[in-house]
Length: 434
Ligand code: SF4
Ligand code: SF4
Image 1 (cartoon, rainbow, N blue to C red):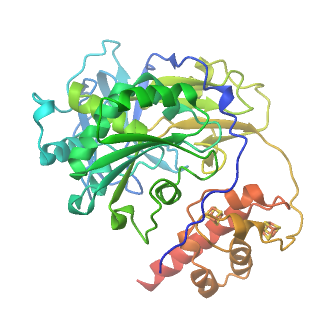
Image 2 (cartoon, rainbow, N blue to C red; image 1 turned 90 degrees about the horizontal axis):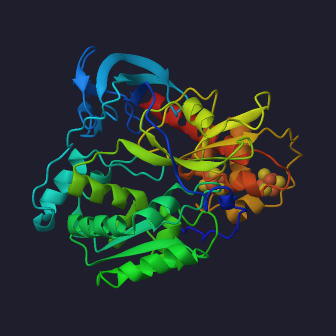
Image 3 (cartoon, helix red, strand yellow; image 1 turned 45 degrees about the vertical axis):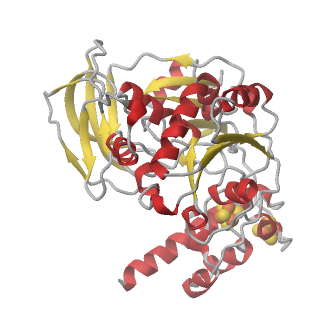
């Protein structure tokens, strides 16, 4: 069945002004970093180091078992342990703890002597060996998107960043325009595509003029502005907005591959400088943070150390919620001891507001605004009745957790939480059947 994705209709108060005009702060790597051994839903890794081993920045620490995704050291020093810590998923997972020796010696994750003469398969191999993943928060291995290049005609670079508060991609693009285009050229080569389009949100004149200027040097790359609506950064919505195309499961069905803008920048740095993703910009924002800002940090830095570095919480006693990501799609965490993963772009701290939900008004607004064309109000009813057949019929599994239904609900019902529960119920039922 074709899924008729509705174009995002809602302008959100993005709160981007809290961070977008401030310079990025650089934080020294902490005394110990903890590199998470988690990739997507997989936690099964072959670990290549053991306690006592010396590592450099860029040493390969481990490789995902079921598909090739390597992870790299972000500091030089000594491996202390493989230990369990809370991961941004909220679960206790294995991390490689490395004691920082303060020397910052590095090795190249890959060594490409002729970047401008690479073949399509060379670029695909580089993407794989760098462990490149979706850096807009998805963490999906990039090379998998290029596994059928014969289907691909257009590379769509997603620089939309529609989630409130987050400006990490914005800052990366502002500071790395040449690398953005260079990485995009490599992605065009990887796809064997004809062209690429870089999409950013409207009302960013400084960034757009930089991109337009660089575009003149690249005949096969164009830049477009898209409306400041949510969830414009969702792949399906963006493909429809920019290319007027709809698909069933994957954008490759209509000849498109979508990558995040920071992913393209990282690919350029990976190929030109041999750098894996060992540091990144993270937006630390929200009304619970004293001085919201973007911070460049080593992968594996604990969140509480970053928050302390930029000035702390507004009040140590404040009752707040800390999120991996932004308020619409982010997940809340129990405390601030988790570390920055390569694929994490933001942490948001919000003061908790005690709102008591009102009864459902049956207004249908959640249904009208769901970008996946689901009927969240009916899914709530099915979930409350524990009716798996109905949950299945209502296709709760197609929910993309955008949070729009909760945001729009006039009764302040946490609609998306009910949909998420329904989705889990369906997954469990499916697992039992196997
Ligand atoms: S979170 Fe709500 S609005 Fe978003 S896709 Fe899921 S059901 Fe639809
Ligand atoms: S938006 Fe809220 S009040 Fe309206 S139908 Fe959906 S759940 Fe009910």
